[in-house]
Length: 118
Image 1 (spheres, rainbow, N blue to C red):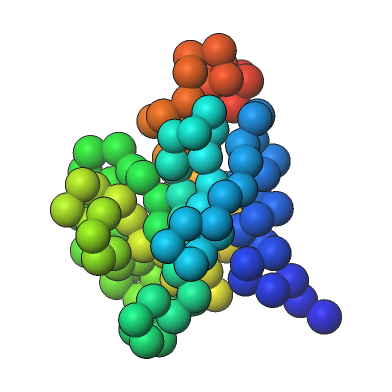
Image 2 (cartoon, rainbow, N blue to C red):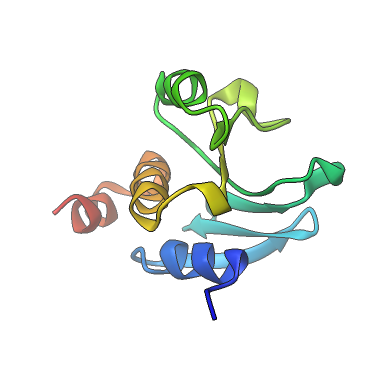
């Protein structure tokens, strides 16, 4: 049996140093030292997507949405700040891990970033 979408992203997010899960807005979110870097979106407002929303460096959202619109999208609320929506069932673990690591490093202290980048 394959891993459920929430279990899959939980495994990836919680593998990062000091990452913690916290429910907010009715969904699991992941933070490092109280700073949000990713959130699960299970059919948000009936949009039909089981997704992960991640903070992203400048330009990443635009590029991914343009190149792979079936996998990546601009999420509501946080999309205007550059966050990327990832349709979990259409992305590989490696793709999710890379984007989650980038999101984490955008808010994590430099000492924790070094553990991820190193």
